[in-house]
Image 1: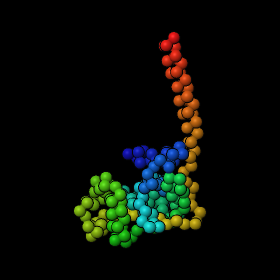
Image 2: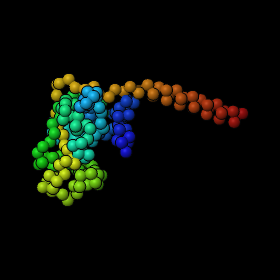
Image 3: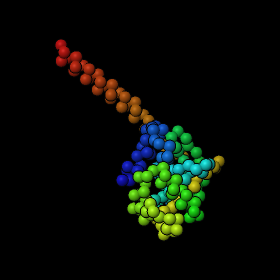
Image 4: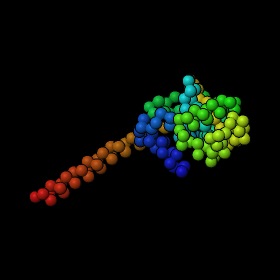
Length: 182
């Protein structure tokens, strides 16, 4: 499961981040203990000038703990990369509105939310306080501060190797097909 959730990172490293839907982003934080950059692939929602992410794994998620220690993060969406300042959402009403944005954009999220947080589709804003430890929301605003480096397309060379292999296979198949007809 963890590897599947990190597949967008591989797409960025291959230079194919632009293939991902605009709601999928990479969030790079500075490790709270190591100081090294750590990247997580997250689903996001935009509302006006604000970008939101939600941790359905709660406040114990590594990326969430990292941004609490250093709120300056790097966001990569498609071909865009920018530095943002992360602010945990402490207001229950705002968090409820953000959850509504996520649910409206992805109905498949409902069973996941229910399984990880206990929030059913019939839950009300009053039920939210029961799940606050198992659910965390973050507001991201563009910042001019220096931030952690993002994921680079360091595996883009693989496309050249793949192209050479495919051309070699095509030549081999073409040659064998020609030998059968003679």
